[in-house]
Amino acid sequence: MDVPELLIKEQERREATVRAVLATRVRNTRKRLVPIAKLEASVQLLVMDRCLRRKWRVRKLVSPNVRGWPDLFVMDPATKRCAFVELKVKGRSHPVSAAQLATIEMLRECGLNAFVAWGADEALIKLEEIFRA
Image (tube, rainbow, N blue to C red; front, side, top):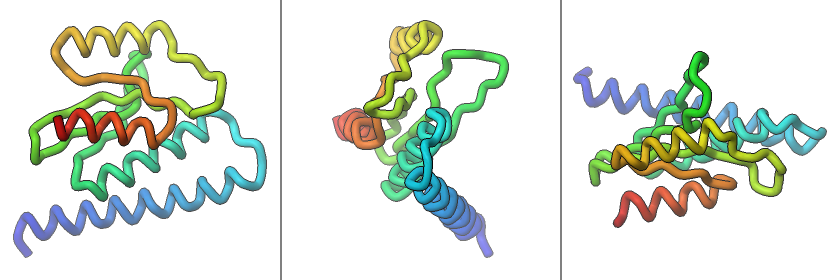
């Protein structure tokens, strides 16, 4: 088996895992009131799944010692463009922190695309605009 086949199989495995976790979380959100952090995680998984379907590379940013970094880093290999996405749950009062706004502004000053999106649909629309511009 050559390297491209291994990479394709690894990406398919990751996509299957994301879909399975997403299905579990969506089912759980219908049963009871869920904390905002879990809802945001579900929205992140939805965006990640849709990005993978579009053949974009996506990574969840985890920075335990640094506050304010966006949730996702998304890259389109075809256009060689990337974006940082801070996701928030639409319709919930969970504001963007000052540290998050400062980090997004810093990333923009460095010439990178960074934005706050309220919901999965808004995030995907903005990513489409950035990658297809």
